Amino acid sequence: MTRSLFDETPTPYGAPEAIAPGAVLLRGFACPVADALAQSVKQVIAAAPLRHLVTPGGHTMSVAMCNCGALGWTSCRSGYRYSRTDPLSGQPWPAMPGCFLAIAVRAAAEAGFDNFRPDACLINRYEPGARMSLHQDRDEGDMTAPIVSVSLGLPAVFLFGSGQRSDRPARYRLAHGDVVVWGGPSRLAFHGVAPLADGDHAQLGRQRINLTFRCAG
Ligand code: SIN
Ligand code: FE2
Image 1: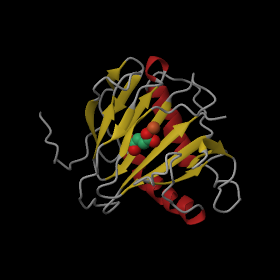
Image 2 (image 1 turned 90 degrees about the horizontal axis):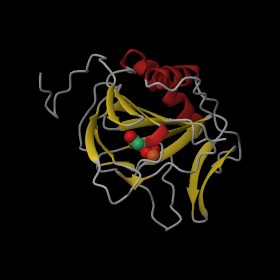
Image 3 (image 1 turned 180 degrees about the vertical axis):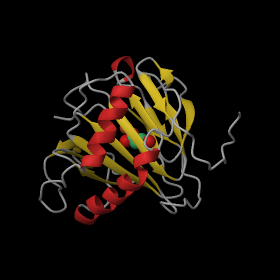
Image 4 (image 1 turned 135 degrees about the vertical axis):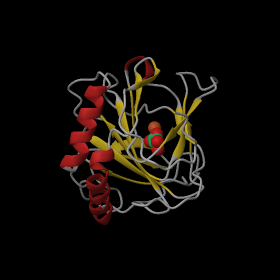
């Protein structure tokens, strides 16, 4: 069956789809726990509000972010870094909810990465038009651990390339409940998100939430 880009029916969880060496797309893998994840996102952002960070180049990101877990990724004029505290409050980031950790560990194992124990979860909120330009996740302390990315809400076009910025990335539609895991030879693959198309998701409304789990420390 061919699925149209506009088909909103949730994909039943099927076989892991290899998208590159060490990179796997698990369609619908988080669907059974999506409501619990969305509820926990609300609790985390009540304690650590989503904010638009400024890059070292002085550009304000269109994606709003916050973190949970022992370490949180932040950006400011002086650079990118992981921090134990939220620069807005000076307090530790909210603890990683149990349902976050559980789905991340299960997805990593499904993709062939056993013993994944993330200490950081970046929460990205895309409103229509928001995008993330091609980048590598390279601020983490443990490059042997994969990145686990969980998508909720409006569908997005995920761009996934190689370790070279000049290689044209492939495009994948990520819908509510889809999970991507990349590690090993793909750990430093360039990736990004095309501008989010407008829409109204039944559970999440006019937004896409993405959770990326990392071993940062
Ligand atoms: C990221 O690279 O941090 C986010 C990827 C995504 O939103 O799918
Ligand atoms: Fe990333």
